[in-house]
Length: 622
Ligand code: ADP
Ligand code: MG
Ligand code: ZN
Image (cartoon, rainbow, N blue to C red; front, top):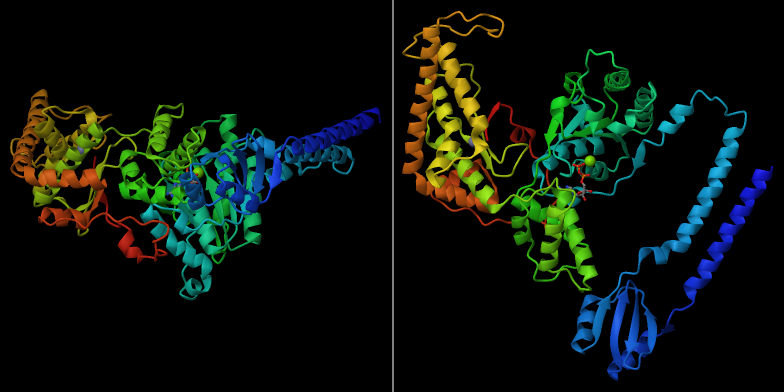
């Protein structure tokens, strides 16, 4: 009982403090005057400066007298300029947030304290004691429900992913159309991409576009200290979702729970595996007509348990890539909307300078720039402010985002252009699908080729051409820079693998003839051939590689004009698709870059699925 009176006492003290602060907040303020008074004073040239602070501004006249004008809206920028033209100093001051909100904060605190005591009191009551559901209750907090008001217009630079998801929106909006045709809902969609590229943002946009509830939970929320909690949370999440269908479940960082199951009997793994199993069971347990769509995000698809990726589970994968220059400009446009940028700022130039930045980095960049500008009392954000912000981000403690230097971009551009040129001129190489110098993972860029038709066999000519294409990146570096980089490791691996198989497995070497020399599990088998043959194999492999190296070297040097054209284009656009590449190769020039800004982007239409998905295996050279 004594304790209780103490608590009540505390509450009263808190309230007292609150009242005192509220009173103080209203003293010491300059006198309020009308707008007309201000205008009159301005006409008479009495005003020295104004300090804008949200919807109010404080006016100082030459006599040192201060008064405050309260307006309904912030003073428009044009008005500010007009005042400045009259020689009045216009300053901006961001009122420290705490000053404005302190009273409310304190009130909230007081309420929270009160609420906590109440809750504790309730918990003590015998009804709730030892409730078996104690854990299950706490899990409800981990699940976030929201009605997202983000739309596709707020997402830019990842157009392919957006187009892929458009179909999903259609399904959620108009399920009957699909049901009549007997189509099953896509169940699990896995979004793969580096941190900050907009996976969560995109999932929310899908919910927003389709106007359905969005239940999100993070993979790490599933994994708790207590065995069984994670699994219970999964069940609860799915139960809630089913009750509220159609809706979207979003599991962020699914790799935290969906790692490959091991055989170890480690206790900490036990909990995760139970959770994962519960997830698998729940995903299977959906009736085919339920309209609950599960989206998940990860930046580490390689560690996921294969059971998660089976048909009927996360069988659709959407890559959310690092944006290219066009994408970056579009993202900058979105986040510049609520910033006061100076007219002189050119977002295209900013996009050029921020190679390697993802959406979150770009948002952060503009925000930092605004802070820099505010600190320096600028009335708008200038290019210099943005530059300073970029420096801060790159130098700063969170160094995960790196701006790629012009020198590195140049080398990558030549390297990838070399691959592309070889693929174009060599008769048996698959045609180019995409060339990019936007980094992905360890690779600085890549060239993707996709076959025109399905095939079962590879011919010898094809294999030789593929070796040549793989070597072309390094060859070009050597020709242009007279020096080579470490960037070609993967290429060599590929080329050597093909050459080795040609010699040892496919009987394609003249010197060795049609003989199978590699055993399928060669690690355990002792070699079935002599030292002599081993030497012969090595020299054959080397011969093939050298021949192709020389062949492609000649090809690149005779077409160095084209090489420059491609490099130029890559430098400007960072990504070239098949059509753009072809256009350049036949000597035409590309249409100027136009970017979609939030204003002029028409709502994107669902593209026919067949057009979007690459069904044939693609070859990557990076
Ligand atoms: P991820 O989930 O991939 O780590 P988020 O979706 O959480 O990244 O992105 C963080 C923030 O960065 C978003 O809230 C959004 O404001 C901004 N952002 C990221 N990507 C984009 C994009 N493509 N377009 C617009 N804004 C983006
Ligand atoms: Mg995220
Ligand atoms: Zn390469």
